[in-house]
Length: 283
Image (cartoon, rainbow, N blue to C red; front, side, top):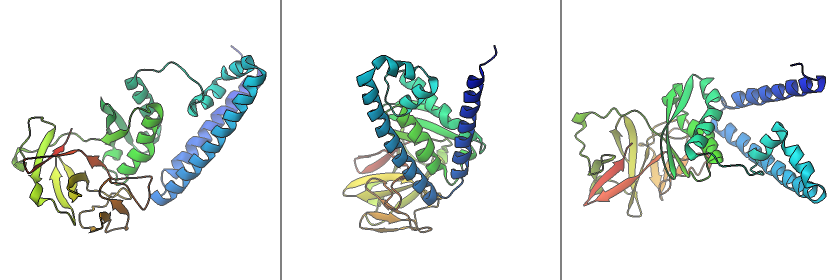
């Protein structure tokens, strides 16, 4: 089938635009975290402006001709843009399908750096994924999860509130850790051993973790700064704030929120305390 000249021109232009977007995203992915935060902030501001303009345009066109608006939405590019800004309704695919669509969206970017991501489990409101290839041990894996994978999943699946990266189990029996009734919960220490003005570091299932007691509540995070993945266990703790010893990124221990760069936060793990013993959920 031979395309009309205007169709060929439009198709070529769209392909060029997509390639251009991919090119800039590839460049930005190699910047340091502080630069990427600025880019993401600019992106959100531009998208907010575009969304408001589209809302006003839709309202105006609706008043004059609803059929014209429907015809415009039949164009795949227009429809895609309206879907991106959540301005059109469509039948909702199953949750698992939407998660897989989100992962498919970010996969090319990860594969361009010899990495990948796979779905492990869905347990509302949490999705568990596994970063593979170079992404599994990259110092910036926390940034990859929050800036790329997590944002895509939450955009496709608003009902998901947490995305967790898990690794393959490499638990060794000689670690002398006892399990609770639920095999996902691992006893790691006693409540008395968890400090209130510092962190307790330990290895569990090949993961490096830190625990701390905040307002009588025990919290557990991955022992890796979300900036460059540097260990945090030698960082200073003051007034409930943990400061990375390498680049001085500051984290609120109660929530894991990064005070230096709110776009990223510490990877958290669920904790239970029973009879003076501390258990961490590892799946």
